[in-house]
Each structure stands twice: as C-alpha cells, then as structure tokens.
Length: 478
Image 1 (cartoon, rainbow, N blue to C red):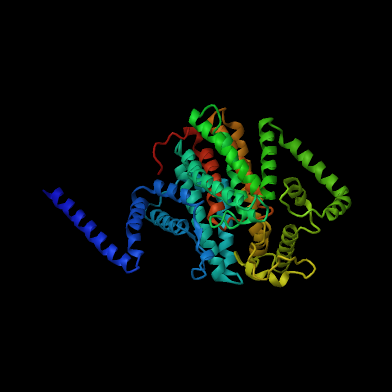
Image 2: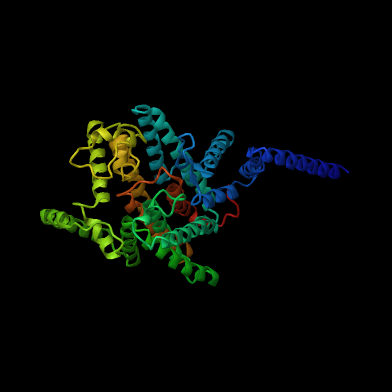
C-alpha cells in the first residue's frame, strides 16, 4: 500500500511538472525544463560520480565557450566547467568529512610537483597586477587538476577504466572531425577556411590539431592483437579519419609534435640509453651553435608563407621573415621575455599576460595580425607564458612536472612486463609528448579541451605507477 501511494505521488508531481513546464514554454520561459537535468546531475554526483566524470569527458570535445556568444563577457565552457566546479567542491567536502586520502598519491613526486605549481600560482595571484583575473585562473586550474588528476587517479586505477576515458573523448571528437572536414569540403579544402571550420567546438585549427595529435597514439594502441577484432577494425577506421583531420587542420605544430612522438617511440622500442641520448643532444647543440649564423641566414631567405599546398605549408614552418603567424608568435614571445625581465620573480600574475603585454611590444616586431587586446591567443607557449605571469618559479614548476612525469613514466615502462599495461603507458607517454612539444608554440591548458586529456594522461601514468603491483584489479573506484 505504501509503495502504491509513493507511485501516485511520483505520477502526480510528474504530471504537474509537465503541465507547468508546458505553460511556461508557451510563454517563452524555458529554464524550468533544465530542472530534471540538474536533478540527475546532483544524483550522479552523490551516488555515481564515476558516471558523471565520464559524462564530463564525453562533453568536453562538444563544450561551448559562452564568451564566444557574447553572454555577459563570461569566459566559461558549458556544460563541463560548472560540472567540474561542483565536483571539486564535493571532493573538498569529502576530504574535510573523511580526512582519508591515499598517501601514496600525495607523496608521489608528480603530485608534489603539481602542488608546488598550484601553491606558486596562489602566491603570484596575491602579488598579481590583476588579482581577480589571477584567482579566476587559479580556480580554473584547481578544478581541472582536482577532477582529472586527483579524482582521475581514483578512477583510472580500476582496470578497464582507461578504455572508457579514451573512448568517451574519442567518439565525440570523431564527429567533430567529420563535421569539420565536411564544412571544409564546401570551401574546396582551402587553407584559410581550415582555420575556423571546427567552430564552435574548437576556437581555431591549432587547438583542434593539438588534441587530434594527443589522441593519435591511442588509436594505434587499440590495434594491438590483445584487443577484440571490433576494437581493431574501429581503430583502423579512426586512424584514417584522424589522419585526414590532422592533414586538413593545416596545423604545423601538430605535425611536428607527431614526428617527436615517433622519435620517442623508436627510443623506447630500441631501448636507447639515456647517456647515448645525452651525447646526441650535446652534439646537436654544439653543431647548432657552430652553424647558427648560416641557419639564421637560411631562415631569413625562406619567404614561403602558409599555403593550400601541403608541401609549401610544411616549408612555411621555418619562415621567420614573412609568415605572419610565425612572426606574431615571435612577437608574443619577445613581449613575454620583456615582461619577465621587468618582474622576474613574481611575474605579472597568472592569466594576466593577455591584458598586460601590449606596452611590451616593439613597433618593429609587430605584424599585420598584431593586436593590443590579445584576441589572437595568449603567449603562444606553455613555458614562456608562465615566465611572464608567475616568474621563473612558475615556468620551472611546469617544466618540473613534465620532467618527473617522463622520468617516472619511463622507469615504469621499462619495468613493466610485456602486455597491456606496458602498451598503455607507452601510448600515454607518446600522446602526452605531442602536447609537451606543441606547448613550445601554443598554450591551451586554460581550456577544458586540452586540460582534460593533459591531466588525465598524467593521472593514468601515476595510477599505474602506484597501483600496478595490484594489476589494477580493484573492482570499484574509491
């Protein structure tokens, strides 16, 4: 009898909601329709956090920056960032309530490096030229790190969750590639439209190409004989789709990053010793120093601008005499360096480069695409940007994270026996390297598109490093 009464109440409330919502929609008020979605999200946050996290991953390639639609000048990606903020709050509340967190995660060298970076961002937000902007930057960095590093480790220690993590991002990303290529076909596959056909999902072709490159190694991972036939067939199809997407993105930095990943793959495959790599790197630097003048002259003679022709577009990579994109990147780097020279220790404040760099531009370095408002990107480097915004420690802390990830990841790869985990670690290190290299020329870690895979990849390496002795056999994430 009691169950029957409960059912009646559910039906009654559902009926009333439908009636009220229909009346409101008829009067052009649509917001009440969001309530069921919000209730489902709240329920998942408390009782199925893992599923909510996978929903966030799936939504990331499809998320939209409301700033692009001139919504009150707010820069936020929907629906992902509000969800990450809520998940972060729940994480902190859980820590306060239970005060239990795996100390192996806290004391892991990569975690310590990440905490150093966050602490320094906090300190330089206090000393910032624009504290409000800097604390907003810190808050965004926190929800990325909390959700996809700290919570990510808890999720990714479950044996097969890495597959869910990758496919949840890969599937919507594939639809965006198809969407972009179809749009580009309408413009005859020209280079200029390729800069924006992926909108509104990606701001431009460089961020789009960077993410495609990050996931490319994982497609090869799933062609391994250890995976079911349908995995392999689907992966080969996606390799073709992603190859077309990468080529037609006209993103030179993404192409270069994949070459770097191939070199790293050969280093791991043939187990080239570190002292050999050090010798090669040292010899290369000496040859570079001895040949510097002739190299500069050759670069200055290269006047091949970006082009629809792929061979000419590749050649334009080294054009620092007429290519506006390359020259503007140099202009941004030079401005960042002068900002660093003026405030070398604390910098100008996290997230403030775009608002502060204009006075540091020199007239002889500006280009036809230069701006004083910073509409065309930030400092164009994940390493030079922090140098201007958070000083020398800010830049070194980012580099330290990367060094420790590859140090621990390489040790992990070499000590793991042949099998699934070894291949997963290799694919993760290769995918992450594409962004590490891309980060020399662009910076996207202030967006969900790049931060979700970047911190997630690092979390996967750390999770395997900590829990691999158990074989990742936990049946449920904590």
